[in-house]
Image 1: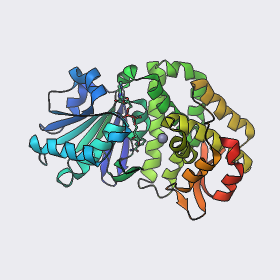
Image 2: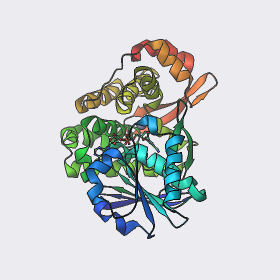
Image 3: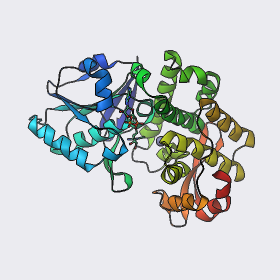
Image 4: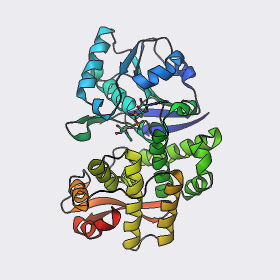
Length: 342
Ligand SMILES: NC(=O)c1ccc[n+]([C@@H]2O[C@H](COP(=O)([O-])OP(=O)(O)OC[C@H]3O[C@@H](n4cnc5c(N)ncnc54)[C@H](O)[C@@H]3O)[C@@H](O)[C@H]2O)c1
Ligand SMILES: [Zn+2]
């Protein structure tokens, strides 16, 4: 097991990579613990949960809303949860986002931690202290910055994950390599098949290196004023693709990274052969590099992007593999090349 630290404004967070769900109890400072999980995770792993009350939620992005939060508050009240209660979210990004939000607001905030059970939540969602839910059609519109006291990344839990969920996480790992760590990118180029087969050494290194990158960025810019924006590489186009075509997040981000790399080439920052390396790696992993969607609807979605500032949009570009920077690009310039990316 290896441990990484995030020093947030709300406290420190310890991320344990390679620790197991069975050891969860070791990390709980209170006798009053409440577990929050979803139906799937409960079905697979309930027998490994410590003997404490469990609140089980449904699955899917649609339930990541204030109604679910309200249901959980009701259950916490019924259970007599008080300020000494410690909440643990056991699940993927949805469970962790909801559990973190509930814990941060119930009784003005109780202590909490996560056991992260998907590749995406291990390398991304459960690290960094963003906790929130969707509101109307807006993703993660209501939320707080608050660090979990710990995150357990149990690599064994990944064995029951559907392949498409593994791919969602892989897209974020490629992203971390592309923006910050050329050697991680190269490692993945060499070991992509072992990674997909969940070889424990390979996946352990990828998860650890990915969190190292995210943790370093979050330690510099917890509240996303500058450096943290780099983590949105591939996500501006990605979110637009996700909205217009309904493909899973990882697929949309994959095609989004290809589009952002090509834009980086067109603007004279990135060598064409490096953009090709990114495309080739994503293809090798089994992620799409183009999404079929109509140019106009992609543009409309881009114009609604949270990162938009007037007629410009904050955009993450690369100048080489392992080095990203943020620039404001006129929407008109994107409009001129949009046909190329979809
Ligand atoms: N807070 C952040 O910084 C941040 C960052 C990225 C993403 N997110 C959020 O994360 C969410 C997506 O997270 P996700 O991809 O983990 O999705 P998810 O939580 O929906 O999990 C994916 C599916 O896998 C199932 N599952 C979870 N663990 C399993 C296991 N070990 N074995 C078998 N099945 C399992 C779940 O029940 C679900 O059906 C989105 O809502 C996104 O907004 C948050
Ligand atoms: Zn993402």
